[in-house]
Length: 402
Image 1 (tube, rainbow, N blue to C red):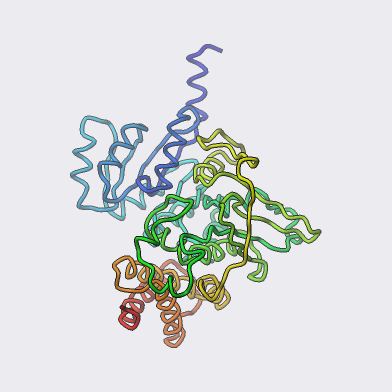
Image 2 (cartoon, rainbow, N blue to C red):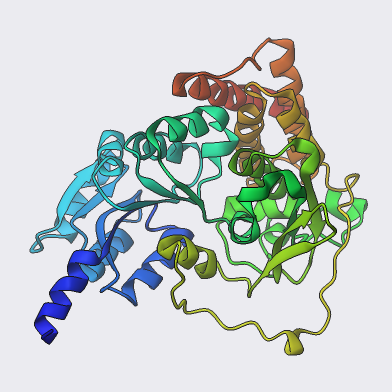
């Protein structure tokens, strides 16, 4: 085979990707991997929001076919930034949906927040393989999302480090032999804070995560451990286990990303350096593995790996999340929406740190009183629960403000 023929064959076999949320942390890490192996991967569409300079630079450097901004007012700046290229440009929510529906081998779904739900479900309805890095699809969408995947045959590959870890060591052929799925939590920047210190904690302190580099909202969720509560809800839907089989351990080193305990006493774990490019690379290449630009784990240099129980008195978000999951219906959608409002209030220095979970709890309690926690059957039901949760959290926030 000639060199030219070999290159043509590789191009034909390249996996075609669309990245929803390309300018965010997961999107940038995905492009870092793709850019190092352009024979294996090619980009069909990149979807971003208001960071037009980054979106345009990504599209040009990776030679995407289409660049989309979710903000319709950013169409002209994006068009101008890509002038002289053959890259298509589109803007607005409908354009984001259309990008998600284009025929590709895989969608990396990493749009942050509820905004990522509609385009990801649009991709799922096409039967596309999804690299799922958007929590809201399962936390808010729940059975609406999973049933859509079952109807279309879409494969869901988890990208969160904890769920990727479980996916890598879970024996699905013998699911009846599983005792527990154990997610690990770093404990965040406030792991050793007293209740008094938590009462006085500032956004600047909360944003200093000891191990991970993440966006502002998820970093605050890590500080409150709400991120772990949301991940437990995701694990429930991803792996078809009971609530009683879900557990969390605090693991400050963030080396063991999750564990699966079997009934014979064996516990299998996935270990790796705290770098999101490992689970991203696993999802991109599944069922194979590819090289990722991540430092190799050297256990002899780490010393001890430690684990501890979560102190639910100081960090009530995990219990709150499990209670919402047990309630069923739209409870987790309301929880997620209220949490987004509460985090925004804290970042704006209007709420003390413990009031994040206090406001979320109050919103769920009001939703139950108002009969707003009914079962969800469609995306419209999800939007209704999300809208109610945000509106009610904003209404109740004044009770908790400093």
